[in-house]
Length: 147
Image (cartoon, rainbow, N blue to C red):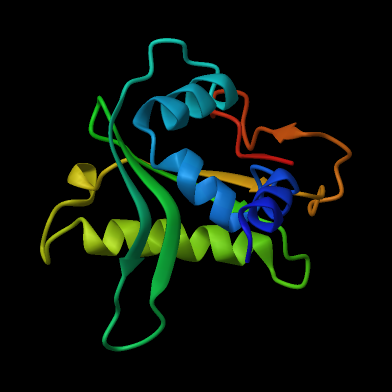
């Protein structure tokens, strides 16, 4: 590909495209701004970002996270971007959260010590059908997803 062809291809990328999001998410400050905005927390601190983190499971299904952020309070926050519309997005988000907890806890650890996990799921469409861009599961919860 020539430079011009590459440039033309890149100009068509959007933040929701996996390859472009991976480049964006590799910048801790970009992830921090995304999460501050979506979670409505201007004081939120992202300590670390691990882009395209694979959580392997030798007994079953593994998961590849788009961006796993470690927040200043120790919480784990997974930012997922999803353009596909042919999957069960709620089950995918639940599976990702469970995988993060499983990888970050030890056998016998008390559940009160299980890390807080936030899933920010960014999709092209309102897959829940609520006609809203941000949905809160409960009034005290941070936004659960954004389209």
